[in-house]
Image 1 (cartoon, rainbow, N blue to C red):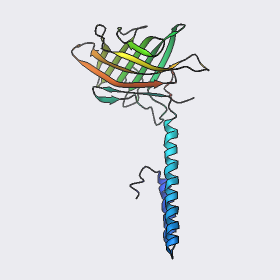
Image 2 (image 1 turned 60 degrees about the vertical axis):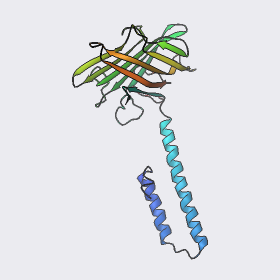
Image 3 (image 1 turned 90 degrees about the vertical axis):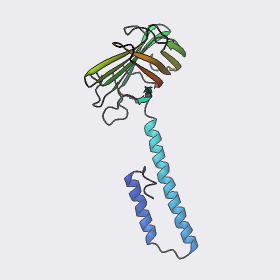
Image 4 (image 1 turned 45 degrees about the vertical axis):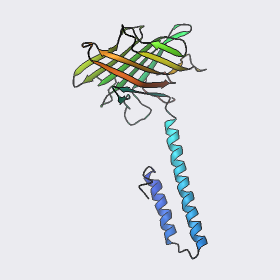
Length: 230
């Protein structure tokens, strides 16, 4: 039975064990008592399972930002920093250009030592210019300020490789599905997706394919890696 309840905390399993032992010491003398014991055990299990489910839901709902993608059919996500699930190596900044247009810079790091700088094993940056609502935004500029670009950096084993979007082929695009304005701030979060082909800057024949890239960024955190409510 314990294998079936493997996801329940040990203290809850111990509590169940105590109840079972106490019940085991009782000597029921008729069918009615057996039924009462069965109902008691069933109710206890439902109570523990219900509490465990509520705890999981509460923990998952704390995150305001999320990001995941596939690189060459392999799942890629930014690193969790330390043991805090709210601390993820993901930043999103919004800058206003005109009254109704903003641009977003999303930066992520993945590293076995949780490095969040130019020495990180993987760095992904996505910048989207002139965002004014839901829709498709081509990513076709060269890497630079005030440009729409995507860049992925491999910095593993001291061999740095930089992959950028094409500036001649329409192979990369961001789709914005929703904006998240707030009453207390001028910052507006975004939800959307990205797909594209990025090419090795030093060897155009070498490329990576990014797909299933989905992000939801309700909290803009230019100077922080904290993804939950403050």
